[in-house]
Image (cartoon, rainbow, N blue to C red; front, side, top):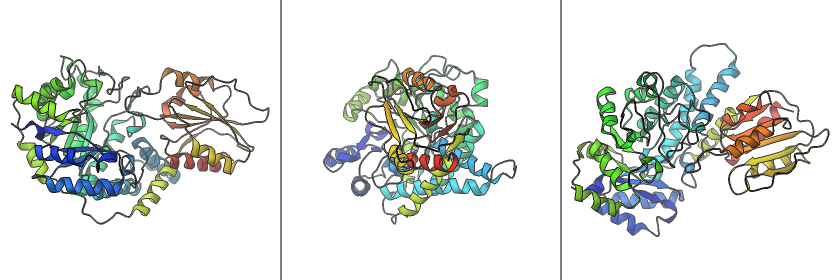
Length: 483
């Protein structure tokens, strides 16, 4: 048995030229494909095509493109995260002010165009599988890894946008992958760091967490990613779902899913007490089809060969044979896609409360990451509000006394990007945000909207992410609504 055929290891796009021989060797050994991280569009596209030419069976070329090709490759378009897209849709509905019930197909078509743009750019780059949509329902405000990556807090909203993304991707020859089964939304632990436990009983799972996955299966999703989650209602042993035969049986029999099952990345702490090799072995024994992101494919192949784990590669073989060899399409209309993204970013701004910015403000930048955040926001503020002052507060900075002039307006800008291995917005950031309440006239969140929950009626604007375009759009929104 060739165990390379079950692996989708990492491909670092920034070094694809220098390490091409390494990736080519893995193709010749029979890997199922790669997950792409980083790089420049034309370079990655060129070398992916060369790797496909080396393969006897089309390779699975995958990537995390929840926010479009620009999330991974320079030259691709950056689209807003899932929660921002849902907010753009809701804001468009409110703007019509017609009191209509249900969903507007026209506004949904606007969101669908963004999914089409992502699929077109991915296919042009040579990517034929996207690890999206996120089908998690973000019901825990302190969730450290999902937050704005989810479409929302309601099963219906997540199902609506999730199925639209699936149908759109797959209509454009891109395999969609729903994640993170059975739902990572109601957890307080980042599965990159350690194993979360989803404590809901089966009744609750069926009413909430499982509904978007069931809708995805009915929509024909080709792949589902098993989360590194302990879910006793599905497997009482506490084994992560990604390694669980009980979970695979549940998906196959109870939910009638006959597509590809893939683990979340094997280098994550969520595999719990198991080594990466043992986790991989258990996943294959459980009936999982693909092992994602093994750290050392050669060592893993040797380990699995000694164990002779039973596998059924036919399903995976059929999936690969059905994959379009992307990368040969005509260049997408990038300018049109970027205009669409800008419009969605502007539409997604969520605003509450009233505040009059009629003089140069004091902008307090609150951040929990290294480096200087908020450069685009500050530049735009200084352009529109000459005389703007800036104060930065970070975990390593000694917090200065918050002082503002007697007639000065304070705008607090909170940067709390959701990213892997970070563990979410820590207690420090939550405490600092709460401490701003007596002083801030207006709060802007570039990240999780839930950080604003303790600010009472303080006027706020939520931009959901911290890309430069979002920062610039936030200032435009401030100018429109608060001046």
